[in-house]
Length: 431
Image (cartoon, rainbow, N blue to C red; front, side, top):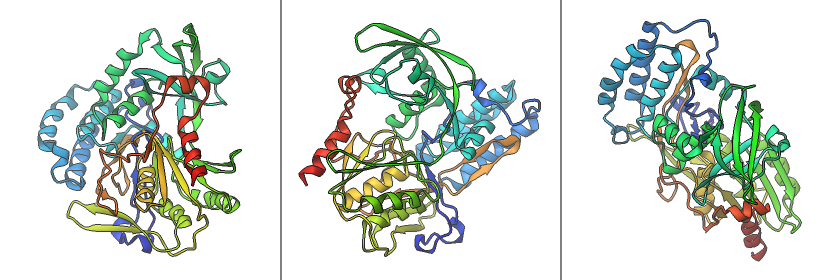
């Protein structure tokens, strides 16, 4: 997530653009396929001199700015010695970008990452390429957990609860192992697998992919889908459930999303309870997290501290705005809830302001100040700040543990039951 130069964040001029974002980035994570590494100008390859300079700039930037002087237990000088000779062996930009990604991934940190030119464009312009489905591990199998209603997958009859067996004829287990081996580990095991699942179906827009699925009745279901460009622009969904409980969901903590959330809360302020659904929300801007938090407190509340490599503490606090919603709150999270979503859920949980329901979050909570532009259009993000909650909890690697755990089950997905949402609603009705 990131912040603007705001006095109440007490960040100072050097942190005027603090950013703390998740791996499952919205958006763009480490991509395993060379085809994904399309450049701004495909006709112009990086020279060997360009590659050497990028390599040195990436290594030096991490060496100087990484928040942890112990580099997360990694021998960072040793990493330089290991990867430097490999620069000479990269035959294409794609191979070079893959090499840089593997080097940065040695830190096992979802926020410290290298983006190819295409990934940078996707991040900046709010789009990604996919087939409209989300995957996760359910009961030891790769399962479709969500299908975009405005996608070719939906129109082809792909449904939540279907088990994915093959991709273009290859076993999913084989592809998963290959991707994890290529990408390396991330901030947590959940983050590692989530990142790999998001890479399984990636490729060029317009290219087809064949999926071998198993339907709930046990029959084989094959689907040939075309990858499409999908918008990842910030958006808010709000409604009142049949029980009278209010429901609020948004996909990212990006600039000015708090204004839409404020409008929604003003309309729902008399609801007997409120569910905030942060599943799949990878984080965003710290400033937006604090703006939204203001709507739930009358007094100033600490939202924890960021700390620099030198030990400088940067405390986050809400303002003294009058709260909009004073009723009971339940926050629903899952392993794709990252960064700012974890910070928000953890602090409201510690304050006793909300009960957290669902599955343990990503465990991806560090701070970056900016995306560093590199030669050829690529970019680098470096975790310059660690984070601890007001109670002193370190969320990086650990995540937020729900007050009420609700496992993802095949039978629920196949029957259309949102068990976590129902549990959150049940808790609020009881209150």
